[in-house]
Structure formats: C-alpha cells, structure tokens
Length: 187
Image (cartoon, rainbow, N blue to C red; front, side, top):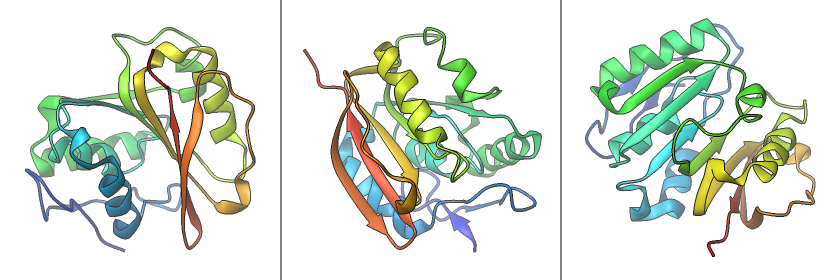
C-alpha cells in the first residue's frame, strides 16, 4: 500500500513505510477525510503526533500549512522512517522527532505552549488510546483551548470514556478504522 502526501507543499510525494509489520499506516482515504474535517484550520496550527509511525499524518499537516509537528515514537525503525519521509518532503525544518513513550511523556507538562491538534494512533487492542486520553484529560494544557485530539482505532476498541476536559464531538468509521474527535472547549 503506497503512502503519499495528498495536498499542499509536498503534494504527491511518496512516503516510505516502516519496515516490518509493527505499524498500521493510515489509508489515504481515511487521512483525506480527517483533513477534510479539520479543513483550513490546519494552516498555522501546532501538531503533536504521539505514535508517529511513518509520520504520514504530521507530514500531511505540515504540507497543508501547520507551523510545527512534534513526532514521538518508541521504535528506532519508525523514527528513521519519519526522518526519511521528512527529508523526501522537504518539511524537516518544521518538525521535531523524538524517541519517547507517549504515556511517559504525557505525565509531564508540555514542553512549550501546547498543541492545536494531537493525533493518537497507538498499537491496537491494548487500550492505549483510552490511557492517552485519560492522561490528556488530567493534563489538559497539552491541548490548547478549542484544540482537538484525533484518535485512530479499530471500531471494536471503542468505548465511552468519562472525561472532564475533553468532549467527544464527532466519530467516523471507515471499514476497520474509527476516527474519534475530542475537543477541549475554550473558555
């Protein structure tokens, strides 16, 4: 399954896949729908891609005008793939790539002002997505007011969460991929 940048500065660039079968890259159709929902708000926004994988989501955001994307992953192969894909697209100047466990990172305050968008696509069937949302709800400063957390999971994994600062406002299913949109309502 070839990955590509759909639109923006790096439109049409083909992205590398992470070697092996440890990641599940988002299909172009799903990625396109996510960005259609986000719309023009991506321009000038700050993104956090917690389980970077190929970097496809963050790179798409950068291509569409995001000012920064911070990628985290624990896999050396994924991190190398993200670096390679940033080089292919010419978007490395606006990216930060770090090897770290998202659940550990989220226990601390954000390194700077927070993010407009946080993308969460963790390993499946382990409940990690719910743990991430609970951490984000305990430390809402990771997400700017009116910011959005986008979760990519298998529909079988979904269950309602009791959250204080985050509110589920949209949910879409594309085959075996569910995308959930949680917002942090502004003041």
